[in-house]
Length: 142
View 1 (cartoon, rainbow, N blue to C red):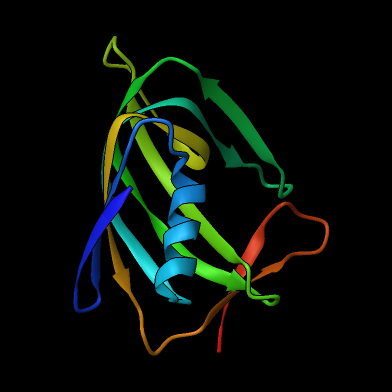
View 2 (cartoon, one colour):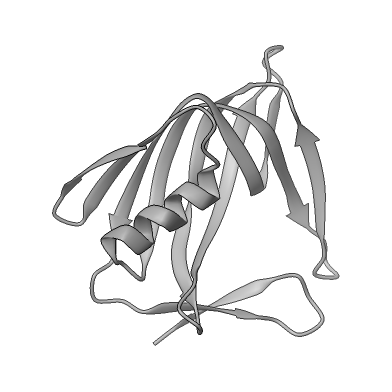
């Protein structure tokens, strides 16, 4: 992983073998920010797990182990009340047959590279709080 920063803009390069959520949480802890918008991401990933949330508040997962193009990635960064990092990311990937798959990103490991832009929100506190009887973790603002 490597990164560069210009003001509140952070541009991150993830390398083969790095998991996206884990890596972005690590860099947030290292730099020390509490809120951010993940505005874009491209590259090539493998071991992709993604899905959607049902009306009953439960996530449904799909997985593609083979490498796919990371067409689009966006989301946000917040913290739990205990201070631990939380990334909420949605993704669009394309398999080698050009089939498109999209949804909530559970995990993805970089195959070749992932290039991700993050906009740090300096004066904002965003907290994630579990919702009772749901897998959803709500975003709250202070």
